[in-house]
Image (cartoon, rainbow, N blue to C red; front, side):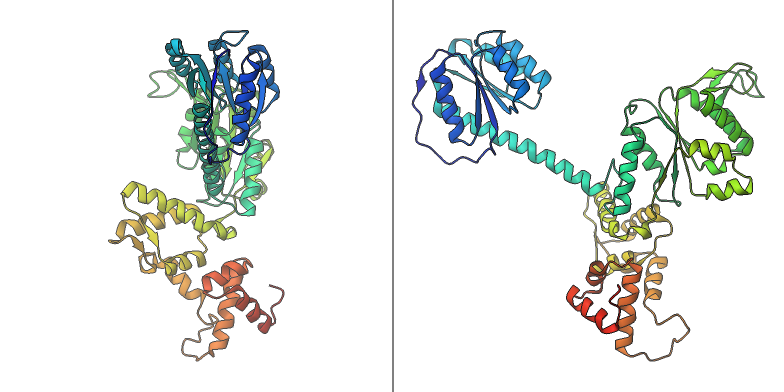
Length: 471
């Protein structure tokens, strides 16, 4: 980079780029030194290379964030260096230095991924401004990445909402399951999100580009399940005017999710077991076996061990599916996730309606005190119903279903022993309310204090007065 270096202006205040590393690729030692001084004054660390080959080696060994590249540096051509950098280190930003007579070349460089260019003779003022701009650009990229991570953390994992310890354990198992091809058995009550977990396993894995095919075993007519899963040949039965591939064949390297597998008839359980073991199927009406390449994920809200004991589910199929088991906790066991879930659903409903829905404090308290037997699905339906019937944008407790508001009122009535007309001292009502709240929230005293509208110090003092230090 044999060129004059114009004098720099007086130092100015720039935002510290958090010790980003600048690699200067130039064959002129004074120019490299001048550029390094500018970089250091802005908070960059700097490494220097005399040639493109040396720059390539440094790129592989140093944590470089920005490259200041002389287009005519010794070694491979500038365009080749730029393409290699962007191919191997796409997050590294490149500033090209070119002669004033070859601006067209610099424009070509920008089309190939360069951040910007400067022309010779190199002005340190201009370099200073450009390095400051690239630092701000990298900072913004980092902030966006962090924001995406925070959103992911808020939501949980792969679109599943929740940060409770039970969910963290579930995420670890999902991450492990996604990297294998073993069958997985997903257990959970109705409405807990079993299909969402199955999709997370599939789309977090290495075969995410292959088909994901859900099959609801509980909704299909038993006589049709076999033909749906295994397919059939022409003339296999009345109406089979042409052959049809089964879902286990169509998957071709992907995943078939068998929801409510406990509903599968016993005779089909045997055929499914053979398909999993032998990796081949026989379509209805055919005498030939067809090889398959498919992963099986299965889910149920039943107690399959009890079904095995009763003879309604095959023991060998149960053990074949039970290579890895995931249990999704019901919503009542992870109440701390309720605000996250409520916020997620309200945000989506607000976006779809073009208006911002909010929840009143009393409505939030009622929802937090409810057990949600229908789990996440019931919660989502509750909020959708409330948003559909309200004329304002605030959901009040009166907008919630009576099953929730009734349960909330009953949860704080006296004893449940029929003392409707009995006068109870306020101190007793207070004690019962506090103890019941902590019990319903699985011992979470901080959440109980917030919902009851008292300070945590007051709560601890009250518990000490009641003789409940074990809480």
